[in-house]
Amino acid sequence: GEDVEQSLFLSVREGDSSVINCTYTDSSSTYLYWYKQEPGAGLQLLTYIFSNMDMKQDQRLTVLLNKKDKHLSLRIADTQTGDSAIYFCAESLSSGNTPLVFGKGTRLSVIA
Amino acid sequence: GAVVSQHPSWVICKSGTSVKIECRSLDFQATTMFWYRQFPKQSLMLMATSNEGSKATYEQGVEKDKFLINHASLTLSTLTVTSAHPEDSSFYICSARAGSNQPQHFGDGTRLSIL
Image 1 (tube, rainbow over the protein chains, first blue to last red):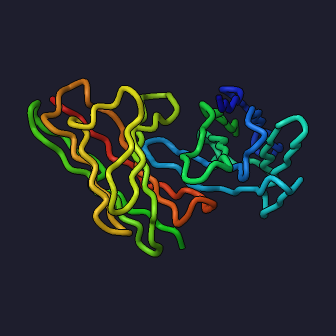
Image 2 (image 1 turned 45 degrees about the horizontal axis):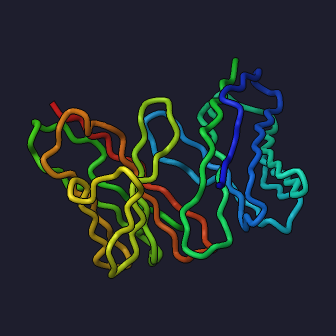
């Protein structure tokens, strides 16, 4: 079955880059997503990448996809205290109207 | 664009009460909406998938008579927790998407506390 794995915690200093990693098992994934959840809030879609792309950049966010290794990463440049949150990786499968498969989330703590 | 509004954001009520949570897509038509439950410091647990005009598909272990889902239009889905008890206290989040290859957009969640 489908499975998405993420490390649970990451701590970085303000101004440094953060890299959050994710691995998935289903090679038929069509889209891969990164969501951000702040305390007490819902999930905010940060960015997503189609499976035939290797990289996508959007301001401070860079997504890298290694389809061969089924590895996805999210790099946040110049990390700020406001970036502290839980980041969820999710995959969308090609089999029609199916829900996303989520990882357990990575809690990013930014130290001032 | 792609805003999903969830209401109410916080509910406190007595045991035995039924509680209705609304999920609206404000600027797009959502062919599919999803309802999740999230326990503290855990990931989202999918409860059910709801397609407009048809019955919801519930995940294993989720009681359909307990968690009633109605998706009457392309912009509104409701989740009713019937005869809620303290063990139903949780954070409930909905999401909506315009099509099968479109991203899911999430509401801000509803914190349900049953006394």
